[in-house]
Image (cartoon, rainbow, N blue to C red; front, side, top):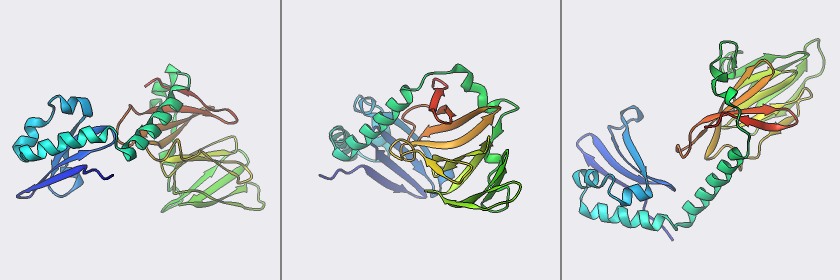
Length: 244
């Protein structure tokens, strides 16, 4: 079974478009680049009840509106979209299982909070170097090593993606890795989160440290739910969220 999920029409230098995703209808226009894009979106039910109909009749025609309405109806039972909705629901249920801690809401904005993004590339280019209590991390793209501060053997490791933001706490290193996360132990062991939770629809995009607290920022790829913060405790996992 195939399903048409996009329509476009060129009007001079402006491209008008309609997109159907696994949970919403998007209408918009652009002049050939991302910064010129102007779009709005709504859920299936809101669309069926009339949202964007006049817009589509203005920039497309009645035939396209009829086709989009039929596609939205079919999208509700379209197997690839059902699979995506199921994965999103599972990730959301994972977040909902984590206790709320209101104190996390402002943690990234506190003046004494370290933003891991400020460490990215501090060794020039894509190389990040972080010194902790007794070991130092060096990582560039997806390869790296840890080494005792007082000299010793390097312990090399490979990551499942590109490393970006990073912070250190008690000789463990917490990294954002290709929209998920990884933790590097003092002996170079890589602890990663299974990508069935992070890296597709639910993504990690930041890591912070405030005192003894490690906090990861997350967002939803297509904005299904609000973005937020998750506290991570070594040996425990995620044990607090900001309540969004």
